[in-house]
Image 1 (cartoon, rainbow, N blue to C red):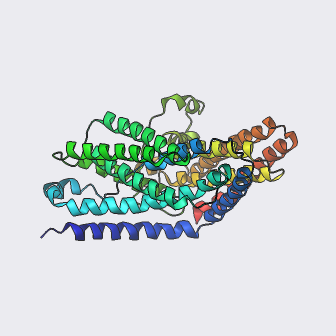
Image 2 (cartoon, one colour; image 1 turned 90 degrees about the horizontal axis):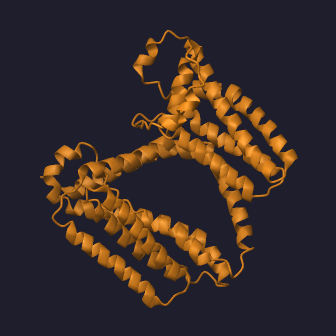
Image 3 (cartoon, one colour; image 1 turned 45 degrees about the vertical axis):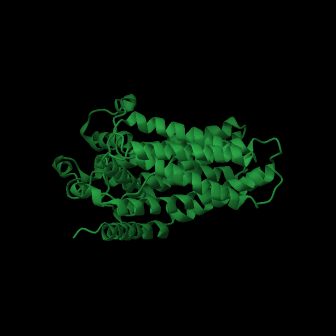
Length: 403
């Protein structure tokens, strides 16, 4: 006899064990040391920046703007898999307890993130309002309530097929969340806050009634679950091989001009493959852009003397380390073995691409220092970046890919 409670427990335990097995590799890696160093540095400058804030600083707007994203992003973790489209579809009417448990665990996990977000933002509020942290639990209660309403609304929105409904829902909820949080952190009267919470409650009841006779959108839920797992697998793939990782290809036609510079020669075969994969497959290109932009922002807003050179090296290391999985991108492709090409060409091509990317990043980050007027530091960081690129690509990389 079908028991949805046992099914939910089995799915949760299986997911927990699988994610836990990969987390061991992530937490044991030296990458964590770098992240801890970054967090420590960011915390130091964050505290120093907070002390400079005056009573005129728009803290309420900033806190509402940032925390509204945490409120609005409210996925429901269903743990559905592709086979459920066939085997659970006829049992959809028996999944009531399963859905309730999924909503509850989704709320618990996201409420923890909300609590961390509020804890990080709270010093700004305390500094600007010359107050202590006493309102923290009052704010936290309101945020938990708002988070639950957002989660409830988001769940019932999934019953709609039209993607425009999903986009409108996100826009409307963000505006409501922003307005509510702005009033909350502006110390507005409780009546206004209750009014906006009531509006969210009315929306939740409205969508619940509208979706009462609709069926679950299995394809949408399975695809959403798959995307979330794949995002974690991409992170884990930096530390160990992940067989379940699915490659996603996205055509970026506007980047084809970079590929045209590579001549069609036999020794450039792997270079063509790696460059195209960097631009189109997985999230390699996105990682490179994000880390470069974050590095630019960190160097521009943080003055750390000669330590800024270390920041350049640090972001280059993070970039190089996260691009290492690109080396194995074609390992499971049988047709690659048919190429009449020496194996050494593959390694040379990968080194050439990685060297080019790291040098470009070093140049861009050094230009930030030049823009700030630190000419000497800019030259030193560029030279240090070139030395790091050589050591990383020609000393560290060969050991890593053969281990």
